[in-house]
Length: 382
Image (tube, rainbow, N blue to C red; front, side, top):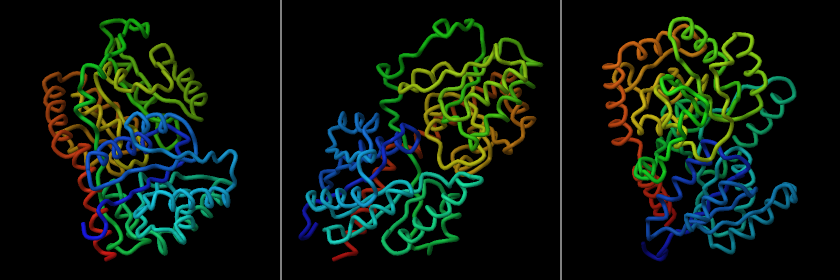
């Protein structure tokens, strides 16, 4: 490695939520810790589940609580940590961290700045729209003048980013999952149907994600209404919480499907719940590479997903799963109905999907590509 025996990497992330991006980062860091030529640390702007997971992995974690520090103070404290850790590569996640990181790296040992785009920005209206545009502009400046390489988690995301940044700055590195842990019996202790008050003969359509407009849950509920009119013993199990929960529960009542829809809420142990699913359904209007989709497929659960974002890069229609157009409850219901009535086809998709994820979307593959990128960037600075 020349004059740099080890490469010091610092991940910068808010850590205020435990959602797909945070779970993905924890998986990435667990893979990067395996490389002896990398020193991995993390700066978080909030305590929470991500901090706990990273400490469990043995990664050094610094927390600068954003509730007690304004932006200038966050920049100042981040700058101090970057100097103390002698950071060579700063790896930021999400808009705010990209911008604050770009400012905090000034007068430090940071040679390169990398960021990961976990998904495209969600649509907003009113004041939130103007606020989002300001954030996007600041993020664009950071990407243009500070960030050396932008990781897109899907080719679709990279295609959208290519409208704003030169192609040489962009690279696709697909999300990956820890399949060994996912399939370990210790982590697969499944919650029983009885514990949820469900009949043993019930057939469960399941989904996982934040209850946000971009997830398209209204179309899933409408599709479930169509399915319930044709099939018996169906249950829709929705794992996750968010600002749309009350509206979605009201819609379920209006559709007269409430008795068969379970809004389970947030859980850290998603794998235990996934084991209940007979079919995994993803009704998103926009998506990067869904971690819950990868985990469901790896567990052998057939998937019905919308053909948006990176979903078609994971699911090959009628081979490893079923793709349907977004915002179309009729197509969603038809695809689910096909799997409900054709057990042989369902089993074949399950097996093919499981093989696909095991071959292409692993923690090892993701961490290997990211570590190679780090080395490539450091070599380019010599």
